[in-house]
Length: 365
Ligand code: UDP
Image 1 (cartoon, protein in one colour):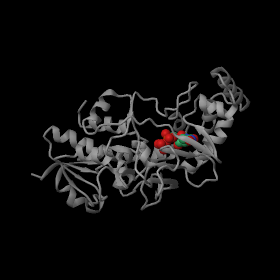
Image 2 (cartoon, helix red, strand yellow; image 1 turned 180 degrees about the vertical axis):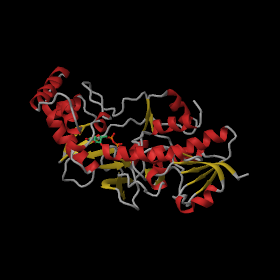
Image 3 (cartoon, rainbow, N blue to C red; image 1 turned 120 degrees about the vertical axis):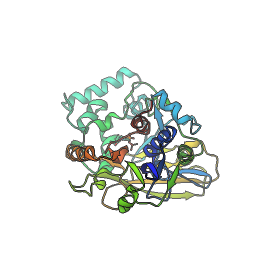
Image 4 (cartoon, protein in one colour; image 1 turned 90 degrees about the vertical axis):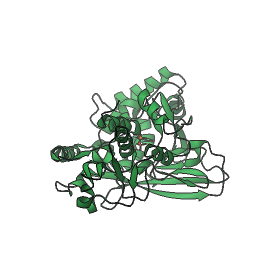
């Protein structure tokens, strides 16, 4: 008899939800994480009374009522609505692309005028069937918006030309012929009051957790503790990179406390020109309508992942997708281990989809 039924590697959202669900079914779980903290990349830390999103901004949004009710068991959510502002060499535009954006870009006033302008630019670019992100973007919003609000940002974010990126990345962004700055087309949206760390701690309440514990470096010893393993780390690392490295994009954050109450007046400002080295600046207090006398900002710099860096975004291009599928075949042959989450499944997952997947994996919902 081993001490635990399940060893859960990674105390992020996927691991915490899975652990919570399994524990509810009477299955004894141990959750481990190599970091000194729980909550994975949704980890928030309080600085100057402000919940700082240490591993990047996370705005919870979903159309799935069950998932929404599920997360509300662990935290109360505020009414935050994501409305980023784009800064192109000091010119400000509303995001996502909507009538405010089109009016500022072209002076158009009606939805018909905006649609005509987009159609005109799409035709001039001669795109019928978009084959890559550039063509997809131009056919959605025209050349001007592509040049000022998409090209520079996307190339900084992904470190590749837009002609070499898959079009699905840009489909995450809505295009609207209405005056609506809400970034997400989601029924439910908000930030857990008191921070994500508290929410994940509530999920893990009553469950054994060991931090500063690296699974892959102590695999044998850790495997001896439980019958089964859920692994939420990078799938290629699990197999010792035996088939080669999957590529990720990484992000570096430069966080600063400023002795003023308001730096940019919005939670997120995207710097969409190529020349500004950071992709965006997050001003954390605005996620929770903060009234603190100081403010905390994080500049985000995107970089290619190399061993030792934190992996953030899977690069789901053809080459990497193929390699992932090969790892997935290896994973299917593992008798006692299952894989999940953004890194375990090499998938550009949103939080709600992660939660849904973890619940399904635990045979809930
Ligand atoms: N994007 C862009 N300009 C922006 C914001 C986003 O071109 O101002 C593109 C970019 O290619 C990015 C994609 O839209 O990778 C998805 O953006 P999202 O904000 O959903 O990315 P995340 O918040 O997950 O980094």
